[in-house]
Length: 225
Ligand code: DC
Image 1: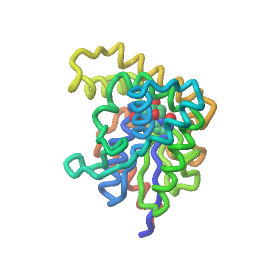
Image 2: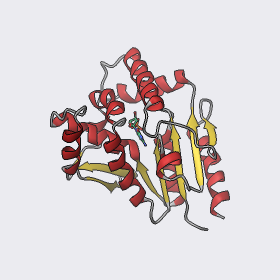
Image 3: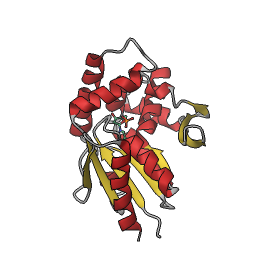
Image 4: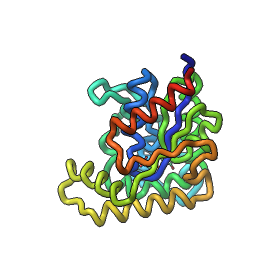
């Protein structure tokens, strides 16, 4: 079976990462969460009080950012390291979620992230999830999946996930954050969130994780043969 590139794009909290991780584990592929890269850059900007409206400051800051993924066997996926520090948990913070979409609109930030993502795909055998993976990062990918889910289902899923570490969080806050991110991600100038023309749509509103995985696995195997 040949090694391929699989891209998974879609709105926030559609279960893209869950699917990408399961798919990568089944196929023995590398899973890359491209959103983690935008989140880690945002964390760096927040920690270092970078004014991201100022292009000069952004460019200098990016020169000082080193991002790496290292496999974490207990999580069965890679954790992201920002300048040698594991920030996998810190990047899920609400403050990062509130600012990441704005940071991800910046052309220099996207060029920085996309160049590294493309390098990671050189050897194929990769599942990458994000917003522009099928359209901009790997337009030639063999399998492109566009995941969707009912907005109410997405808010509930995300709320449950965040509530585990932050019991003070409200449904309203989660809903507002998702709506805001989807709006910014879909309307930005540089590589906005779009379904690639040749992507297959997977609506998982009424699917279990196993059902969703089986559909995607079938598609992947067809492309790998
Ligand atoms: O997948 P996520 O929710 O962790 O992504 C965080 C943000 O990063 C998301 O709101 C938009 C941005 N992003 C992006 O612009 N392009 C990607 N390929 C991945 C994420």
